[in-house]
Image (tube, rainbow, N blue to C red; front, side):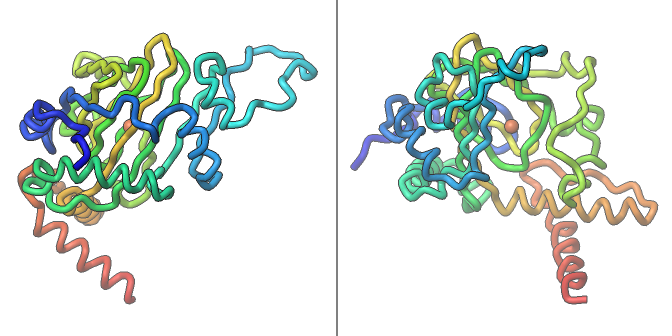
Length: 283
Ligand SMILES: [Fe+2]
């Protein structure tokens, strides 16, 4: 039997926070052979092009055309030379590669004892690797998945905001997102800052990011590598469908209550939306 990646205190912390609260966690994934720079560079060569986001580094504001570097370095080189290249790379849906699919399954299997009794089976497992330049910022946004972000190298600070705060994250924006009509990025206002919970993670640490918790991320002064483990659940799909149903009610001039927080299953609204969607599809 292989040694578990998550220590007993991580399981205790996850049991206390999942799925509703952000929390700092720990992991034992450092030095894993699939997460070395060479392994990640090789993975980037195997992934489809549309699963890689690559920014080859900042150019100065003013630069003569003949001074612009002719051949930017390859993604593989950018990953191998992360300490000096100043680039950022996102490897998306790494489970497309069988070895990484197995790694994701192994990691999430370890968490099943906390996740399954609360939100049911883990659906649509997806993994992302973020290789980021020093001091870079990921703007204010939210994600619809359950997420645990594991830090492998460098430091980053994620500042998280209450997703139930109507001022920070309006109900209508949530509804439009679930109908495919709103981007993940959210509008920032300076008065939100006082509501933020900053959590800084170093290698061996992780953050539980609850579904749809607004956040922004600031990298530390050295390059950062993080692995994001994400999944959906029947509970998260039901909340999303209840939001979509609320949009319909709003269109009829009603002022629907927001879906109830966990552990409510939002069964009536989600079933109503699913029935309507079926009728619409077959019409
Ligand atoms: Fe995010």
